Image (cartoon, rainbow, N blue to C red; front, top):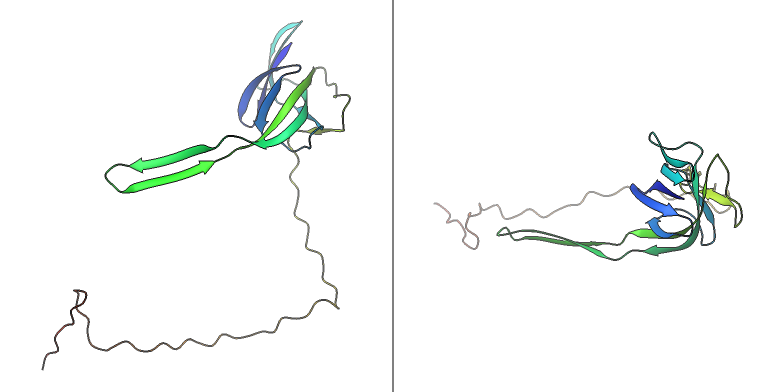
Length: 168
C-alpha cells in the first residue's frame, strides 16, 4: 500500500517505513505528526484518486530530526556590465519516518501525542504590563536644531580641482 501526499508544495510517494525529508514542520524528535493532504491511495481495494484530496485518509509519520539541507549557491552575472551577485541558501528540513497510512478517518496510535503537520498560527500576546514600582517615565528631550557653517560663497567650477576665476 502506498499514498501520494502533498507537503511543502511538493508531492511524495510514501509507504510504511519510508524515511523522507520534508520542508520544516513543527514537532520534536519522537512526535507523531499527521500529513492530511493525501492526493492518491493505492491499496488492496485498488487505486483511489482525490478531487483534489481524499477525505478521511491521513498519513502518520514520526519526526526523526530537524536539520538543514545542503548549501545552494545562487550566482547571477550579466556579462560586460560589471554585475555579479553571489548568494547562498540552506533549507530547513524535517526527516520523518512514515509509520502508517490511515483510512476511514482513523487516528494514529502509539508514540507521543499526535500533532497536525501544520501548526495553527499563533496570535501575538500583549506585552506584560510593567508594575508601578519598576516603571519610570522616560524624560522627554527636544532635539536642538543643528547649525551648519556656511560654505564658501564663491561659485564652484564644474571641473573638480579648478576654481572658477573671479571677474572684476
